Amino acid sequence: MKERVIIAKKQPRVLNPIQFNVLAIILILGLLPFAVALVSNAGSSSNERYETTMPTTPGLIGEYLNDTYWIDNGGDNYTQYYIDQGVTGDQNLDCAYVEDGFCKGYNSTIPPRRSYELAYYGFQYWLPTVSTEMQQSHWDVSPAPYGVGYSGASGDDVFSWHLESKFFEEIDQQKSIDGLRFWMVDEDTVSCNNYAGFTNITFEGRITFNFDNQTRTFENYEFEKTTRFEYSDFDYTHGGFVQSCAIGFIVEFEFSNFEVLSIDQFNGGDWDNTSISLYLENFEREDGLNFADTALPFAGDGFYYLGIEHKSINPQEVGFFVKTGTLILSVIVLGVGLASTPYWDPFRNFFKGGMIE
Image: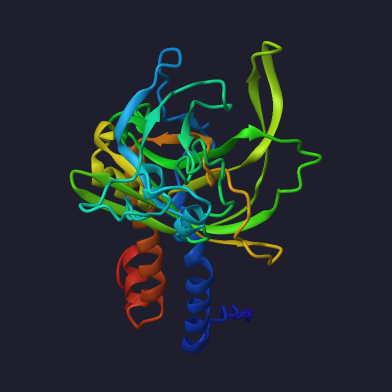
């Protein structure tokens, strides 16, 4: 009888419990942040184009807005400067300093007076998007016969505005948004090659949605900008669009999927009754120089152009991506956690067709 030679198969090397736990920790710490980011942004409209949120008005017929106003105009009170130059305590001087939406300048009027309201002119040709002409940080503090002019400074703290629902009429009802950006451009053009007032700045931003006497705020946005802004506008003299240059920049807020759902849950897509408060603060120059006399598009006693754009997104689609991604992520985490316990082998064998004795 022939002898058979039996070659034992080499058993696969199995990680010991300590090695497996170390591998599991590395897997979770290394991949979990990327997985969460994927769930947070899956299905976003990052490839969609921005659309105007602002409606146009016929011709140049303006509309008075009684609920759009400056909240804070820089954080520093320069009222005494204008008084020293001979400007009297008229209505304009009262609003040389605005805080929390009220004039707190010369007279400190009792009862306090709301800061100057702003008119609305939705126009297509000032900027490459629909925009309106907005009053800068200080009302005309130098009316005739004074001729003092703007002091050149407003502060480096908070510049903030309350914008009523008129500014957001072009957002589709029942939709949410995952991007919102604000164009801010001084209406006075300058020479891009010869103007010496451009600089690089950093600042922070936050945005508050107001609906049905409730608020929801998104914050901790950081921006690095140059105040040199080139754009295309309509030149009536030549009857066409030309390249212009001015003090300005675009401030962009992008929302994660969770924030998109939070906004939709907050206002239910009712943009006709949603207003927004915008806050820009903690300004610094990147060259380290004093910020006091830095030119900003919205600082002065003249006007600047404000344009607002958005990216729409379907909240139902976002909800599907978030729920599906969260479910898959939960299964993966559960699997890794179970694999590091004595229950892994019975669990694995169950899916192989039953327990092996």
